[in-house]
Length: 512
RNA sequence: GGUGGUGUAGCUCAGCUGGUUAGAGCACGGCACUCAUAAUGCCGGGGUCGGCGGUUCAAGUCCGCCCACCACUACCA
Image (cartoon, rainbow, N blue to C red; front, side, top):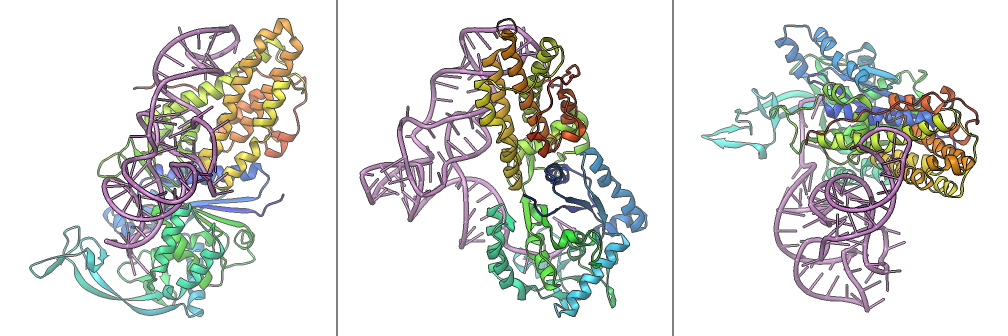
């Protein structure tokens, strides 16, 4: 059952912004998939990074009185720090201001140009100087012969030279591609939206700008810089060595599963423009693009103006990294919008992590400590234990894996905690504390069964809660080299001395 | 406006191609237990499955209409 390698990416984050829960969320999901697949023995390359070009950055640097490069060096640090804050296991971190990226963008441009996919034209439309944005005619209102943008800024008809990508010619080929690859865009509802959009017809895409300088110069016409999305999307292949097809990592674009995780707001760029660029340049399109949902904060839409942006650093500082990682993936199906609330987080932490799982580990290990002299009993099974094992423990790794392959993080975690609940029922039914005097042999069997269940839980939960599960595996006496999925088939030897248990999760007082 | 989707217990949601008394978690009530982080287990109350009409021996599950909500409807990233 050897699977091709996995290339998994987050979007590169635009540095003209502070890291918020949305960034943390995408990165976290990618991290869990990367860790899970590594545990399964699959080769993985996990990439994240920062998008550092564009007019907004240029202007922000100007306002800060800095050179753009110095400015981005400074502000992109917050995103590099986020990888540590969230405990990310990314293999690479790319910045679009790196020389290798400029080279890759220009190589892609030349490839498109050589294939006749690019032409020079003019971009025209209603432009609001104050907003630095173009508006469609239906968005405008007119008073006294002057047209105004929705923001209230006056607009004027502007025409600037621009290179165009022949996107209109790709609509049919994109539709054929979606047809042949039904899983390319997920979830399915998003796929329908994209298909509807493409079916309505595509315009050629303006892919250069002359209105600012902070970007990748267009080869052969340095008055233009490349459209930020062409620049940004290219990061995914820059990081693998493009255009050097003999680069060590290039095989991740040639023969690996190529999975992009994105927020739903940037799906179009990844599901339409990006595969079109790639196919037009004669390169593989991605294998899969998954668009996840947005968070609200205590039922309210998150926005800077409301001042309710969620800072991942503060979140982790207050609740701890692993509870936050668990909550974000457990609470809401990936792909749907969800609500962040302190109450809900604390309920998950107390009820599921501390009471159900943590306490189960603690009571089991305490019994082994006290009644078995701290030594793991040899493998064996009671009748009820055999049924419990066959129904909930043995199939669990596969169940979790199937859910994670479909990016159903919440269902994967639900499956584990269903088994945790069952384990609590099992220990209560068997009451090993009462068996000590009546049937010590059975007591040893029951405790061993529970230890085995705990070993499976901890092993499978490592990708979501790496730190805490490492401590749990320590307490269970599982050696470092036996913590991958393949090791679950081999029982630990009886007679292993176990350390004294200690609580894994600290409960929090619920303010409500 | 157009297209797609959602509406099931107090809350969050499962319910594949229509078929026994509609399920789970949380919350709530009772009981049991005492190994454990006052943890755990068992039992229970609670739903005219958005509304109306239709197809069918049989509909939460299919069809029509209506109501409510959501998403998409291109070039700031």
